[in-house]
Image 1: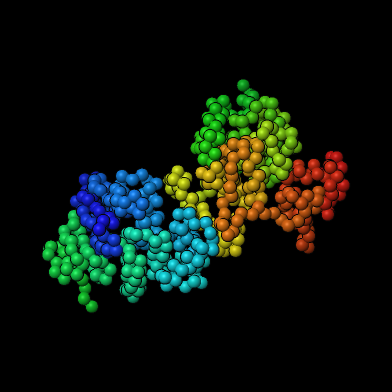
Image 2: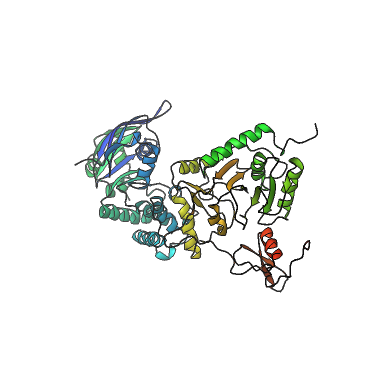
Length: 256
Length: 289
């Protein structure tokens, strides 16, 4: 089987400082990969490099495109990369405000990606927007409300609907549950798990919350100071951490 | 030296503006940046249009200036006087006799010919501006033809009002490539933009010039199930009886009285001179107001 995403020796430097370096992994279709690590360990930098938001200084990010097969996204032209960004890829930001248009109604937010790939039938756009709002548990009568009128959890669910409406194959998530209270987090995770399984999505989830990866991720990558210190199956890494830092991370989780 | 150079601007500036105009004509709908000059009028009063007119005028030109269709409003009168004084060109109020027409917010009702140039005053040249505030991003969107966002605006219109409520500055796609703001003309005028005359757009504060060569394809954006409709008030002109012209609604008393009149004053005057009389009109007399 061809991996959906092959990452080879990706490195990003901020002047003399290391953002991340020597990162390599394969992601297979339907697989969910978690990236954990403390603040400043380079996980968001890595995600930005993979999703095309940042330009890495070295390495290859080979994506298995629907039409042309595996291609290095870093050497694609910008229009091609941006096209990927609104069709096969999706990016869920930590703060819903970064990923939503706050001045546009919920329906318009969900419809934007459809219109960006050429949908020009209002009735169809609106019904798929309502369908997707339903899937993320937002009532149909909120379709014309602006995201500013939504709670934090609803905004995050709206952002997810907006990203998944074009049926992407790979979803990047940057701390999708950050800043939400635990009960809202639990519902969001439940929802995400359902959607990922149902749509057969591949996903890369960056988080510092080990509970999130325990629930969602098949595989885990632990980062520290821009390096990957440990990789493996999620349960294996969390239950039997080998590297000193991973042991620290796992033992730092508060028990209620 | 106490005379102005012909048409106020110095020749180097005109040369720079003409280069921008030519580039604009070569790439219809593309916003060409230019070094807009200070003009002796405030921004928002047509500094862009005036600079384009000044760079386009020749001494043989006959100029007409309209503001919302009218020849006799402050903006139109002062710009007309400005060019009378600084260029000494002949001016006219008759659309058919003019060779260069500077306009704010209207296209004349009378069909323009290939011997004429229409210059628009543009406040905000960027159609995507209110949806995407970053200039770097809007330029990229134009470059990469990412115009989905423009339809988000129309989507919002329909979801809030049940129909595309944008009534002026209605976005158009030019020659299947650039999405362009036609300046705040009513969408009634959009279909007229495929015309024989050259159309030039000048935005002074925003420092942009764009242009449409004659018979350029100009398509108003819409949805398949909500097609574009040019709209006007459901009425005939009360002065000249015209049923096909764009109308202004005028409140005439404090008891709900109103009348609809042609916004194009020259068109209305011409029809009345030809003997047409509207519901509230009186027979036309030469020289009467």
